[in-house]
Image (tube, rainbow, N blue to C red; front, side):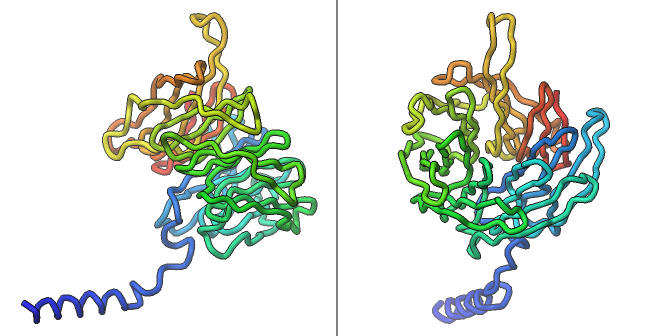
Length: 345
């Protein structure tokens, strides 16, 4: 028995020390440090999105699509990217893309000829690199995973520079800004509130723990913060006191889930909907829910979010991997890493 154990241990040790095991693939050719989401934003009749964000893909792109004819969206251009592009923001003729370790500045003045202007390395360690972005004035605020919050000065878009930072004891995945307040979505630890009146010296104000879920994306609307809370779909924070958000509630369940893998909320948008039966308006959350497709929840009562419905694929051949979305009017532009771009009424 001892001889066989020695043989098996020697074989295992030999494999573990072989080049295939000892040298991981270069960043961008293996897996990212966390579940991947997509960046997507609308600029006029041009939709910009990162495709794909997932692992084991030979190439990744920033893609521009003409959606002036919603019945026939047309691919305009795609710019090859390295790393794992997961979020983006648009300001005029420029798109800012977080790419795992870098902040990319892209000229989008001509959607048919996307052009990389500059790549700013935020951190060599992807564990401390950017995953989320929000713009305010000439500053890009970055959610930098274990690297906390970074402020990047965009006064000269061709030469952006890191202008401030705040370390946080969390994995920061998403970010939203309103006035002089920044809200950082910090995975299982909830939300951090930060004073950004002085971008060079952001200051921690408050930590709001998450009683459930793992917060990845955060959207602000009408005095509330709405969260894509991973395995519980959506949650709500009150911003009545902007410096000290209060947890109100979360969806107890999705109601519909993929028969294959379940669901995971990657992205969300807030929609105000007119409903005659409600004698007024209601607030809806539309979420890109991974293998569960497109999910809708009623957030009119923020303390008791309510699942409404879902748009699912039909059978395995139509299964979704919904990782990002943008909303314009009644149209949802959904990044589906199974097939591409879906337009949903």
